[in-house]
Image 1 (cartoon, rainbow, N blue to C red):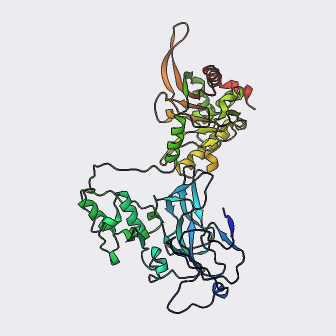
Image 2: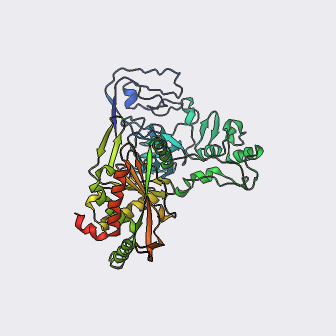
Image 3: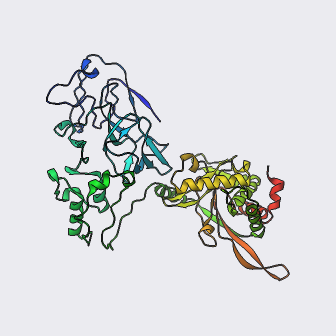
Amino acid sequence: MIVRRICHRRAWSSTPRFLYPYTTAQSPTSSPLTSHKLPFIGYPNNSINIKIECRKVGLCLFSSQASVDVGTSAGIVDVPLAQTGEGIAECELLKWFVKEGDQVEEFQPLCEVQSDKATIEITSRYKGKVAQFLYVPGDIVKVGESLLKMVVQGAQVPTQKQDVSENFVSHYSGVNKCKTGGVLSTPAVRHLGKQYDINLNDVHGAGKDGRVLKEDILRHAILKGIIKDSIGIENADSRDQFLKGEEDHSYVPAELGSQHGDKKVPLRGFQRAIVKTMSMAAKVPHFHYVEEINCDALVELKESFQNSNTEPGVKHTFLPSLIKSLSVAISKYPWINSCFNEDSMEVVLKGSHNIGIAMATPSGLVVPNIKNVQSLSILEITKELSWLQQLALANKLNPEDITGGTITLSNIGAIGGKFGAPILNLPEVAIIAIGRIQKVLCFADGGNAYPASVMTVNIGADHRVLDGATVARFCNEWKQLIENPELLMLLMR
């Protein structure tokens, strides 16, 4: 995603910019910038006016993937978080793929971020060397903010004496320093302070030039009663932890000692999306329809599929058959497969059956959907479902995987429970929770008792669009297909 912007005689951002090679005691050799007499000087303080001496100015092209593009001149560039999708304003940094000091090729992955819709890899716009990380894993980064600084085309990192760059002075051979509110600290130390809700300005720094160390944070936390055990403080070394290999880039300080106090846990990624979605869904008038379905024939069908399975990577379950029979029932009752637009007061009857499957993952609840189920066989649905489950568990779902759904299935029976009362996944108008299949004692019309495999389903519906009679008829159609799967042969295309 490379977006080019044309800037003509105007500043393009208020953040610190460096459009010239670093200055030393002696004047640097001429460069393309000095030959045109364009000494751009950027200051982090917006209150300082920027003086621009221009003799001849043409059209300059700047990439949104880096804050500075100086043609063939060497320098430091900011690599911002680009727009990762429509409506996404911020992302959580999950992990770095590179380390400070690494050489990076063009389009090489730099880091992995997660929005409330998907997980995305951020790639490098330039070939150069990683100079400084501005965030650590776990931080929230807004779109447009700089993720890191890179040295491109061999330029050196600004020295500590340059007052114009004191807000991001770094030692290239050692640990990166950042000033936060006047306090020198590493990103790992800032992350630790954030975890314990400690203001770094209140901590006495024992490091060089008053730099706050990890030991200072822990010692301050003990004095304030946040941590009740100081074991391991003397051996703590945040620099080693932060600058180790890739596996340490997602470093989160371990809990020290026994803590019994409250702990604030920020919601990130998919969990934030669930908060927004459920808050909106709670305002929609729901009603629920509950039914029990005899699954004896479905159990036999699954066993038959598994016994005749010739593909070792395929595992047959009940869910693909339920998904396909649901699609066939939807074809007869298309209003179940619709979306409601409240602004225009219109109902859109969806032509594609994009059936979403709610999945519990370590990153939270996510609902990827299988596209065009009406055109897929049960075997194809089985493979697609397995692939989506692997992506969800690995936190690798794409935005396309979790958008465009038309109806949702929540298989709570895979975990436990007879039935649940699902909440709509807007703008869909129906959601179905299916409980576990269990052997129960049933009675025939003549009073004879017999065992049966029974599943309870609970259909949640938007009462603004659907009425009870429509949902009941639809459920009867779906029930008939599940109890008599041979009917699918008559209706499947």
